[in-house]
Image (tube, rainbow, N blue to C red):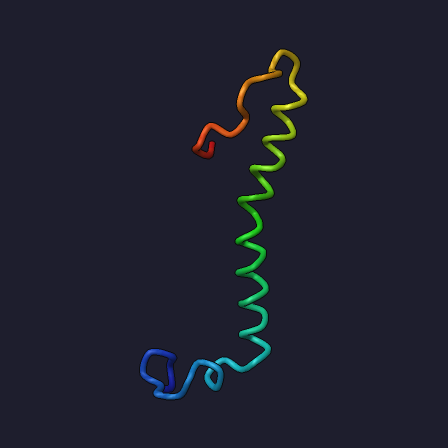
Amino acid sequence: MGTADTDPRPLVFVLGHHELLWLFVVGRIELLIRPAIRLVRQVHLQRLPGRHGTPTDLGHDF
């Protein structure tokens, strides 16, 4: 059968344009998750009492 591993055609013709569009959209959403989590964490840490003047970005993610 024609699987993507053995099919010599480009991926566009194997999957189709609509499937590739959905894969692109899902990939972009995945790339936005990490910055969104960091932003929420930073806002949360800034709202905590007694945390003024302490760095919220320690160079690594939690």
